[in-house]
Picture (tube, rainbow, N blue to C red):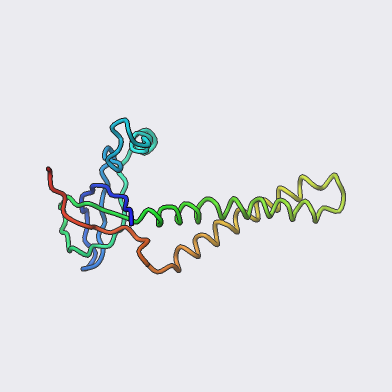
Length: 150
């Protein structure tokens, strides 16, 4: 199974099982030397402040430790689908239903707009509900090891 990895620093340890980490913005996935996708460069452009994430801590890393955080590639795709594709799909379905419900041709646009907005909101609500009710199931990021310079 392919994994996506990044370097981070442990900011806070929550009990024995989880930690708050701050990801290294310049690091990305390590492929930003001209051969990769350039996501690290984009994050530098649009994300000025450091990002912090809650991750599982199976190795019991301590505050200040530099670690490697990983997540399965499939988990990233599932997350993107949940956050973007589901609301977009419901937006289109809502617009179509609103258009069908319009009684007069002059009302088509207004009903389609209300339907689209309703679908979009429903998509975000459903995505949030699904996200909050999913078990970890390998989809949560976790600390895989201490970082060592090679």
